[in-house]
Image 1: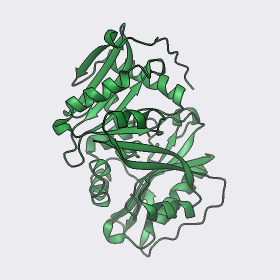
Image 2 (image 1 turned 90 degrees about the vertical axis):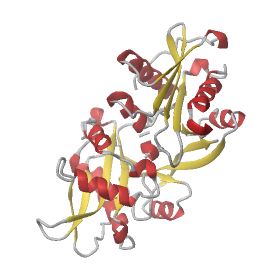
Image 3 (image 1 turned 45 degrees about the vertical axis):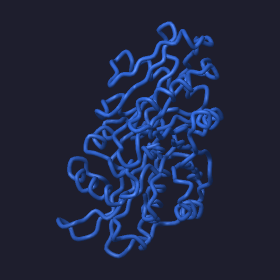
Image 4 (image 1 turned 120 degrees about the vertical axis):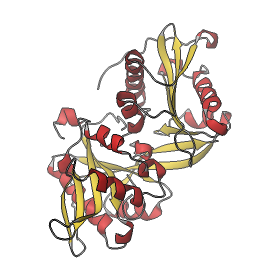
Length: 349
């Protein structure tokens, strides 16, 4: 893992300089990236989700605000506020360098977020349910509103073969050809999960530009004859640590939707993009099934096919994210050999 020293001493609150910006320049982005690595090394998990990190690298929406806390020019705190979700309300994530914790920097970050959030509504994700997140949220008048489980299973364990509904076949995603149909199905499959349903062409393109993207691991279920096929489901797999492992997976809200209506992101907000301090690992990144094909076992078959693909890459383990309230999905994943490993928590006003 990258070693990033934390030279910051405990700051007096009055010495901290604050900025609220609509966009970051290259120097700011570099500072935020170093802060994220410093926190990940200390906590064993990245404090910002894949969705946020992609927006930092490729540019985000007009409704985003960046809050930066500096001490003597060094970045000691950062918060990302996305106010584009008019249904669920603004969503935020934050990070404080380890040596500046318990000094009021985190509380001031949340106070800035509350001031910037339209109508005072705010959701904040804590990745890994960090010990300080709950008390800070409580002090700031926020409540625990959602929990995502991270579940894992060893890929060396036995995997049953997928059983496909009649007329359904499997192939790999075709970039530039399947994009529009995939996005349309994704919207239908996740109608109750705006974070995932709102995936745009730009969002898809940003993910396809990431070093981990591999179309061979983006499995597409189709029905119909050649030349007249319809996509009825998909399983997008991901490999964490792809560069190190030379394979072609967040932290979604979340990160953070198979036929039972759940996706593995983050990441909810694509939770999915956390650094967990482990060797390369496969992820059930997102599974979606056409609403009119629920109840046929297609979600289970797609999940198994993706796990078999990840095992074929020589990966030792697989992970996924699932909403703790989705007992149907948890039963399925438990039946497939997954068990709870960690949690992400959303706090709301």
